[in-house]
Image (cartoon, rainbow, N blue to C red; front, side):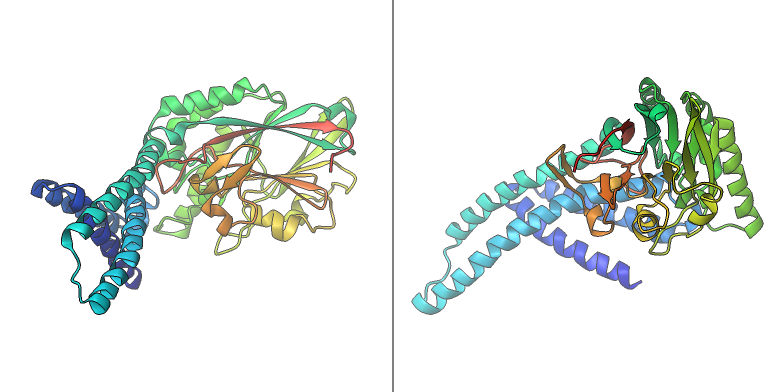
Length: 411
């Protein structure tokens, strides 16, 4: 209950400051009433969905859009708050100083005109995040990008020089609302004509049946050496209230069956060998392993049984904290790890090759793209789908294509 009280207090403070800017520019009483009605409905809908509904529903479209609408109005109001509060910081002390030093009461016309100017500037700036969030909800969540990398290894078997891996992650099928856009993305994956397709977890939000409308769509994924997958934290059904453990277990078994129908070889702390011209690379897949309350079923030792340290290794592990905490310092050398999970927070700013920022960096050390530590690489995929917030702003849905090259790595 305390968190909702804090939420309401913060929301009201933001609203009061934002309203000062709004009413300074707009003189219509009807527009003022509309402002408060919209604020009340959006906040009320959010509280109702996240506190009033039966949480057995897990992450639903209703929850997503309640959060999306809240973000759409709160971020612009934060901009307005900063602008109006900053103006108060200068205006109020100045008025007090004039009153006590010159016994001069503030001139209302002066402060009113100044406030109107600041309000207009603040409203103009607030329109930018407002438009960006709406774009992210309407278009950004399906703005698929193909990101291509070339990684060089001295000990890559010669037969795998030029080998192409396509990675997708975090499908979150329960969030989709446009099957044609999903079909487009699957075709985009196939256009890469990669040797193997690797899916690094979170096929659903809550339950296996979310995937039923998309089985035929994802069954069309094609790669010469097959399709492989691992489980993510959402795949276990941990975010739904089940009637029994047996029901929860059956849901997981149903999801495993769906992955098989699609054509994925699901690796549960296991490995396979990809072979070419008498040479091989080891492909390993572990169950979810994460920190901060996430399931830790991943067993690296079990997955690497019967392979040697001399084998070239590609590891699929959903959560990048597993690489940070366990993989990179393991006795075995895991050349390339593929992860997802973070979604890049679905919000941020990226200028390719120059700048990358997202709130995700406050939670994850490795949150999007390629990283290298101790001669080992990890790619953190930004995700194919979306969750909670029904959109993406600046951090777009990703299809990763990694080409393995044999040679001497650059520093």
